[in-house]
Length: 484
Image (cartoon, rainbow, N blue to C red; front, side, top):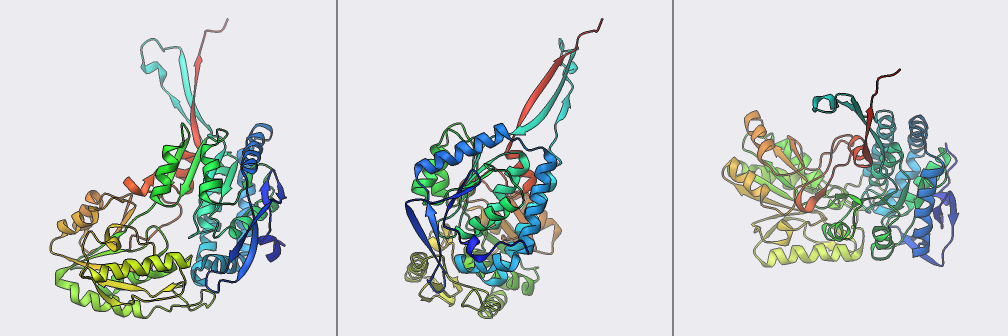
């Protein structure tokens, strides 16, 4: 084991320039299921953000990291994540309310993301450019290299408090950038833990800095600060738009929302579709941006599929995230649980019918399947970000594609069909960043390019693609003269 203790993982300080610091204000972190306090963290002030960015800039100037060091540090970090996997999973389950089985999967994925980023550190390269293809440049020789973009401000959400952090931090380090990280204020302990691991792995001071606080204060300080060169953000479209509007000339990567459309065609394996769609509509209480929300089902199989989907949903275990059998845990806050309950009631009052679920007990909303919904209902056209999905019939495959595309979002979509021609048509015509065939909109392998269009964001994540976002092309031209 690495020797990182539970006490250290719940440390009370800001992490700036390789040191844990105190602040005047503290923030309590709760177990999202029991509501008991499980930790306390320091809240950053504007001066702390200034210090963090200054530290990051100084690190890049005074201690640039060669590729082999970046590789070794990230490799050791991945090993430490694996060694501490059980403790990290327990922490995620407590502070995030995520079922333990999903928290374990998140930790394993996080280690793989860091390993993949480590490998990418060795693959950063440029190309030669044939300048003699242009008249007048016969004596020029050209090449471009990739250099770090500069200090990266990373703002991360609560729903994957470890994996979405490493999706930003690890590629930034791989690219040679220093990072100022602001995790979600509801789930900061996983980020504290990660900083401990990076420190133990040998990351030089200044390359990771942690500032905790609300988006309206600490987040805004980061976005407005002139000392960083890039912002990478995962969160809501409203906040993403505000970041983009206030980012100036900084590079911005945004991973935002979705109201994921999924098609179940008449020729699909209905058992497979119902099993996967139920798990991915309600796993993690539906609190992830590619969670299944809109399920378009061909009218010829509507009744059979609906019966299978209800049956699969009713098999899910709802309750305490620390129970290894739990499939669906609490919402991140009571306020969010109450909002989702209101959206369900609003839909029902407008004609929707609850097939199963529809009730709330405290912070837990039962997995809810709806039918007879309308396209302008919030549960359809907006992002629910909770355990609610709707079954909607269609007549033709082209109609289904149009229904999926009838959205302001465009992150990922799922299509269940055994017809390769229809699958290819969906891949070409569905307007999202990813189209997943015979799996749900929720599928993500962490090394693939991941991102969306429209209100779902801009840019792509996945270590290779994030490294490209976090590096700049620098053109180098030699005017070659004949030697004496």
